[in-house]
Image (tube, rainbow, N blue to C red):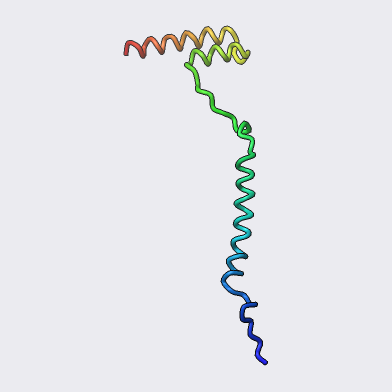
Length: 86
């Protein structure tokens, strides 16, 4: 008697199921992660202010001394007056 697989053997539907199920499971996992991901985890870029605003913020945070602030503000004022006239 010959061994014929007939409708019980490997056919196209079984191969498609072997590929389709892992793809569907992976897509489902990706969708759950995409929907439930914490969007606040990525820092938002705030718009940068003018150079004088940034200088004031740095003075307020204590990153620069008052003397450095005065010197840098004078340089910035000189640059902006040149830009306005040039």
